[in-house]
Length: 93
Image (tube, rainbow, N blue to C red):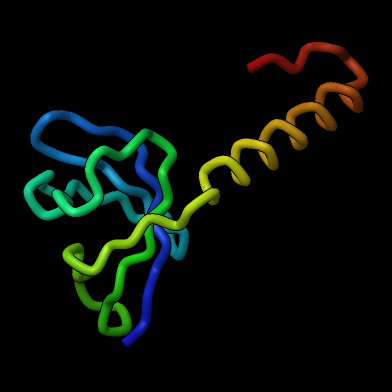
């Protein structure tokens, strides 16, 4: 069995929207399938088992501790590098 990492993009009371690290696919997962992970914060990263390209088994989702923070720090470093090397000074987010 294989696994894929998914980042939580959005959430509502009924659904969570995840983006796959593997191929960027976006899926909407009913909150009822992730009660074992609640509460989740936007940006959280989970590892989910799948059968090699088939539908993910969301009941196997496990939080990857510290991964969201690591990704935020990496994005911040990339942003800092880009703003310091922007010759026109017009880079803004």
